[in-house]
Length: 364
Image 1 (spheres, one colour):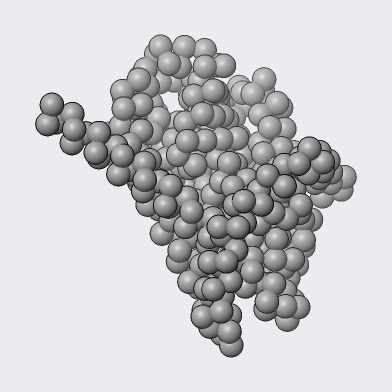
Image 2: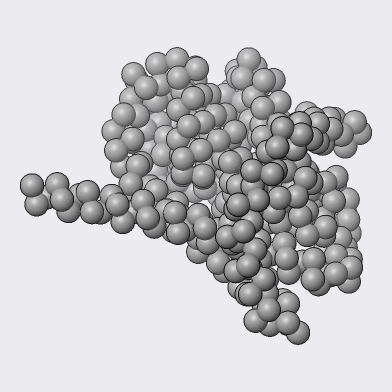
């Protein structure tokens, strides 16, 4: 009985911690948006000089997300900047697309942990990079369509307007009542130094996301991992839904997709079963941007949140039926790294850092 009571108390404390961390996360988004508005046109100009066109935005999304290893963090910041009228929707969407590529670096780093054993490493590296190749192929196909025809922006804006018309944004007002007063008090702490507000909000955002993931992981994932076997991944639909639901809960595709890498290394899961799971995780992780957009109550921020979701849905609709292509590319690259594992290090450095830095330098 005593052990059960301790377990219940622990669960209760973790549940309370999740509520507090979600509030801090939303508060940080609100502070960033409020501070950017207060800083005005001069600050907006400086930011726009950094992301001057959609192509630069795409590369910045890859690089920044690879550095912070969290598309949730990148998308949340983009939502804040759009809500603060610092970033336009046309420039924000490519950053979100780039973030989808950058976030997959975590999987690859996890796979490198198996580098000491050739067979395990080959399977693990293939499981990690199949996520990369899906996102790369999706960007290669959808970025030109977005650039020339704004297909993602138009679709997202249409859905955001429907959301607004049915009262979706109005339902968010109670959230604003518990966030705005606190945010304005914090913004008033340094009236002549608004940069300090933004730095404080960045720290708060990072801490909230980091501990939120840890608490939820300790509460949920330890139990879920036991069921990652042939039964749960029995078919494509089941694997896709598992990735979608689990990532929606933990708000981090990096965690949920990294969990299957050791299972692939052990030979428990095949690429064919991991692939739809990764695609579901890609859609599930967009819940973080949506929460951030809800905190702002801004129609453009809602549009960006839906853009993240729509991009992943479009990519899934196209490359789930064409799964042989990304799976073949992942297997081919893994085969090369089996022969010379230095290729894995070169791959990470080149895709996530060297190419983005060079392209940003050339584009300026």
